[in-house]
Length: 107
Length: 232
Image (cartoon, rainbow over all chains, first blue to last red; front, side, top):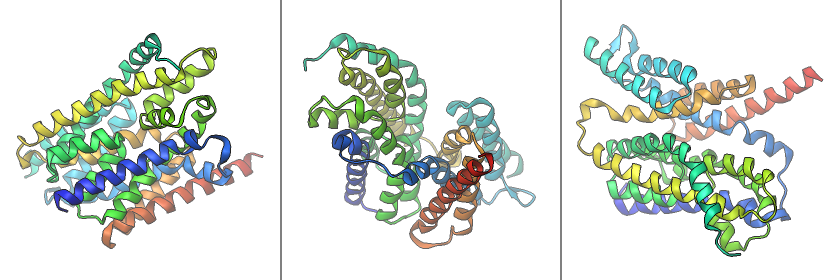
């Protein structure tokens, strides 16, 4: 993507995001959300985030402990920390340190 | 309605603790954007105009893997769908403001501003400036978000590739995903979405992501209706 394409993409993202946030606030009571849609919306974050994160964790770095890639191992450690601490910083720090340590030990 | 400075400041003060999360998130966003080859200026422009952390990180990783523009936009729509819920939930409180004011409030409608406002409004009277409260939280968070992204982008440009900072992207998503898995239907939505995405990873334009998200959402919603039926 060229820089012009990137800026166009980001501008469109900004418009789409604002439209979603403004939807009900601006249109007010003139629209109501169907119950089925409301129910489905609750599962969007979990489904989308998992769909992004899973292939990224299985993408091979070329360095593995046996058949298991170090990125997957570091990701599992980070997931455990995310579950226990709910902290972005702790998850990020543990995941990166795990990746560096494993890469250093195995590579 | 005139500007109520003390209510704005109250918003700034209530929003301050949330910045602890926004600063590292913004730094990581800046660093990872540069690590996939984006221009630092473009990243700061994105933070200033889009102002949606999770959607930005997703877009960065998709642009990094050469995804088509419409896939990035569709992903943005899906990740931001929760904002439609926030908008529906806050709308009854903001009916007295002009369209321009409502747009300004919508621009800063993120997780933090929504959570604080929806807790505060019912406790205050009608004289309370709901507009200045939410704008106080939003303006502070926006400034810090853009600043943190800029610092991250500048730092990221100095970091050697051997540090593998692109791994920050899945880590950040894990940090958002794992604490959100609070019910069985949610867990099922995540497991279905994740495994479908993995199975379809070879599809062009990252189309697998879109299909996987839809499958995961359907799985979650179905599981919820089964759960409700068996409890009834």
